[in-house]
Length: 355
Image (cartoon, rainbow, N blue to C red):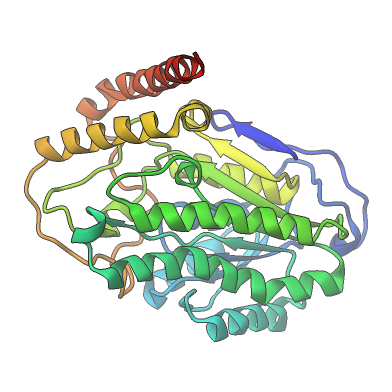
């Protein structure tokens, strides 16, 4: 299994490829403005946050991008921006929970560009609240959007990849695919599910060495997603620091387009969190719960909301504005230290359990 850990933003590179028809070249491409010239990429969740940053990054390097999201107006704005770059873009308003709509997205991409090289499942929604205090319809919608949405995308494009004997499927997951999050049970279930789904697909496609399934595991990212999401806690919520620049995650995705690997982890707390969970998951869960209760106890009151679960997000910015707070920057180091402490506590707990 190929695994990468993405450090702070740098220019992505790769080995040189053969000259000639882009479809006949190896996946590895040299870095540069036109490194992705001729690549056709379908990208869901493209209207804001990581998706919008990724669309811009792909188009700036010459890719032809097929953009999908529910908000048609926001999607058109992103497409217009991408079309001023070195690549091109079309907007196809799509709800990923609708399998027919995802097949129509695939067909629109092939009708416009003739084929698909890369499909990026990037949609992710959340509902924050105690499990039994959150409407069951909200839980269902989270799982439908995140897990079933990814499955709908894969089901639409994999026959095309099999026919061409090549293609890259990229699944956006998160650290939540490894470490359970209290107050986000459906989100956690969906992310654990996507991780297992990807592993199953890699096994099924193992006889097709030029068909790749890649996973991206960022830690908390500074996108509008938290503000757009459902909140049933009655308190204002924000991602814990340190939060990543969405463009850094976009760089990781672009690196997979150039050089596919099974897994890429983005953000300093990723590996410590995964290690702590592997050693002593119950201890990590208790620490996470206490941190969540502490944070909510200090937060301002806020109205309960369904957020963007059942209707498109209103904003379409790349950034969520959470990195701008000096107070959040001041405690970023404390958060990283807390993850390290969790690893140490988990290790000690495991040692005591063996005695």
